[in-house]
Length: 269
Picture 1 (cartoon, one colour):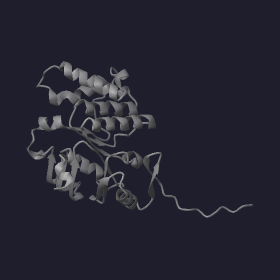
Picture 2 (tube, helix red, strand yellow; picture 1 turned 45 degrees about the horizontal axis):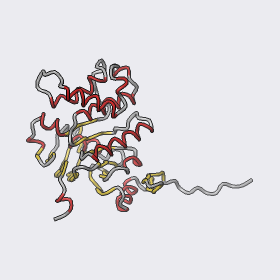
Picture 3 (cartoon, helix red, strand yellow; picture 1 turned 30 degrees about the vertical axis):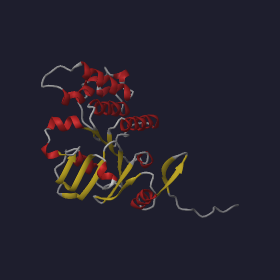
Picture 4 (cartoon, one colour; picture 1 turned 90 degrees about the vertical axis):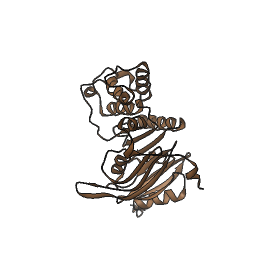
């Protein structure tokens, strides 16, 4: 029995294919994502990363099967799935006239009875989530009054407020400046340390290398899945980007740096 079999799975994809606009985007993907770990999905533009994440979230039609915490997602009640899995997507639409507090309270809907008023626990979780994303100070401001980065932090707080066991995030660093990208990284590490599972699609490869595992995609297929610290993962990452990047270690961190061609020595005059 392998170590993977001994560990519980947060998500499992079996032979997943999906199409968008009549064109097939995903081609028979299978993957196992272990509970209590952070997996980053990376790859070149058009690899199918966001499409795969949406399939994992149950947001796109597909062939094949998805299992969430050991249960077939197709057989789960919508409310049960919403309690177990939280979603943060790209350019998410939200009611701009709602204030930040009310937007985050939407994340508590799976835990509330129909038309019931929010409980003390709901309010506690909303405040905790807004403070975790440093968005508490503008809780009374309408979403339309916030900058792109502020809005992104409110939407992240909404995803956190669900208090789900599995969190899926598509480009969560969009519009965040470097300090708040670092805050997001620390927050994810705290979530994983508490036993939650995080799956993110990231374009920022150096940030993705802080994850526990990388799932590398190209052409709608998974070309490699492995631990971020392994040499074979680095080799697969460099290859999928046509060796235009190189993975290096600096101050205990893995970084993906541009692999610049060596230029001819400039003439001296």
